[in-house]
Length: 81
Image 1: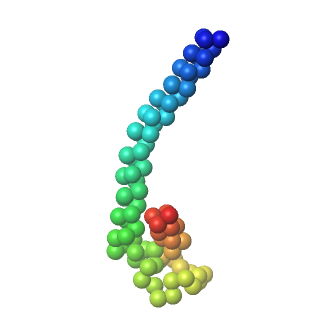
Image 2: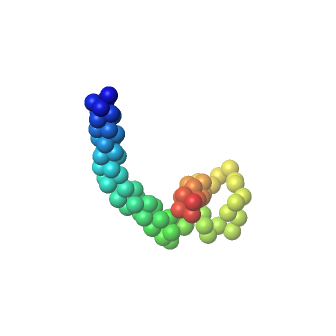
């Protein structure tokens, strides 16, 4: 019985170590990605491409070719959310 508990404890410890290693790897990468997204979205070029300066921003027309409004709104909601 004690050997089974030790094996289960070791398995949980190994899973925990695995998760911590991935957290230390992907945590900073996610932070850099998120900060880059904020910088690109809030720069002048990002505002222009997403259509922030359009007077009729929320009117969807068939030809909105130079603007990527849906992506800009998605990035903005990801930043705020």
